[in-house]
Length: 414
Ligand SMILES: Cc1cc2nc3c(=O)[nH]c(=O)nc-3n(C[C@H](O)[C@H](O)[C@H](O)COP(=O)(O)OP(=O)(O)OC[C@H]3O[C@@H](n4cnc5c(N)ncnc54)[C@H](O)[C@@H]3O)c2cc1C
Image (tube, protein in one colour):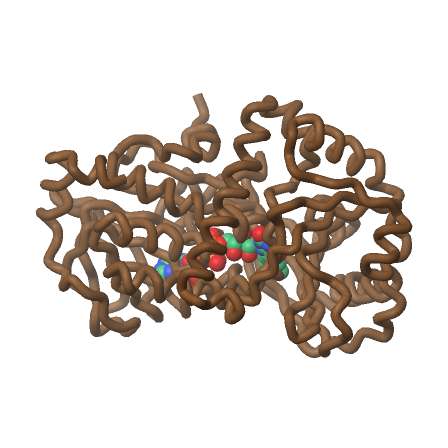
């Protein structure tokens, strides 16, 4: 990263737009500078990670968030921190090849370690409810075959997983109806909203300027700069990173078309005795849950028998039928915790891409506009490393290295 910054052309481009003060200021729009090297639009875990790594690389960066930091889909997430498993691992090997499948796993593992390290270094792991006891992928009769094949493929490729039998699942957490599963070393869980706020504070300590409650209504490309316009204010920059998740169509038709919104449901229970450590999922993360250090069960899910209630819905809305489904499923699966009293319910929306992998890198056809989005329901374990990668790409002008597999160009139509 530093080597790239030493490139005279990069230095020149950056210093030409830099008028920000050295130290960052406050999260109020009054502090929006007139110019910056880079503007990041969107302060979820993805944009905040990008801003952190840019600031750390010495780039003067402004992060503009229309609501509060970590308040979008990131706040709705349960916080499962396990390598991305939207598809069974053996299928990823089949479709993308062994090397790419392993690379994906390693990106997530680096990302989890990097974020955890930052939280430890800042003495904030407890505040973020970080728990790295591992990730559990549980099998039911309808998924057993796939879960086994996935486990065998992971194991064959030397990735750190252990099979657990149905009896072990029962002993571990009282689970009923599970036919087994596997445990992933290095996985776990955290509170994603809290972790993102801590990440924003870390970015600020590195010199980033964080602005909340400012809706970027559009960007204009001028010869010497990109102008980011919000209501009554604007700022100029040399490059812009869109981390706007399902709302990316405002800035790029290309990106907008590739992101499909999916609505999910979540609930949080009253505290119950601690039985779950790390993170848990079934059905390739259609259902995920964790237990906070205070004992609350946080669960999210959307049912495969209810596509019409999930697919293509852009606005969060509580869906009583799906809420009841996931609540009943949980009670039936963990009878020792029933009746489980629900304290909060919520709904959130996440953006899927066609291959369930995010888009990280320059927007095709533009050398000054970058995108980090489309995490397809699994952004929490990936965003930190993708933020590092996009920062490198912005600084060097080269494709995002380390995450080439996520290049947005893969969706370009001939
Ligand atoms: C119910 C639910 C449970 C989930 N559970 C998990 C889980 O356990 N593990 C996991 O890995 N993933 C989970 N996910 C997915 C996870 O939430 C996402 O992958 C992740 O949060 C994406 O982060 P992001 O930064 O891309 O998006 P967001 O967090 O949505 O951030 C985008 C930000 O951009 C801002 N923005 C948009 N447009 C503008 C604009 N014009 N100007 C300024 N700001 C703008 C928004 O306000 C928002 O804050 C879950 C999702 C849901 C809905």
